[in-house]
Length: 72
Image 1 (cartoon, rainbow, N blue to C red):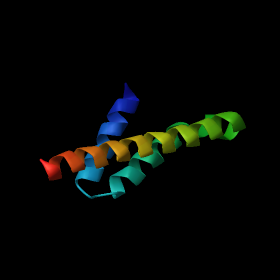
Image 2 (image 1 turned 60 degrees about the vertical axis):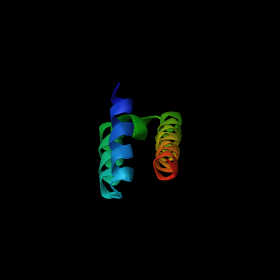
Image 3 (image 1 turned 90 degrees about the horizontal axis):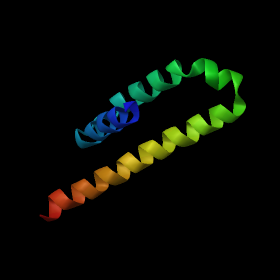
C-alpha cells in the first residue's frame, strides 16, 4: 500500500521535472528503516536493491507515459 503511494509521488516528481522530492522521499524511507538497516546486513542489501528497483520501474513507467502523450 505504501509502496504504491511512494511510486505515485516519485512519478509526480518525474512529471513535474522536480527531482528534489525524490531525494526527500528516499531519505524519509531510509530514516524509517534505519534500525533494521544497521542491524541486518542482508536487509540493508534488500532495502537498497528494492528501493532502486522501485525507482527504476517508476522511471520506466514515466518514460512510457511520456512517449504516449508526445506521440498521440
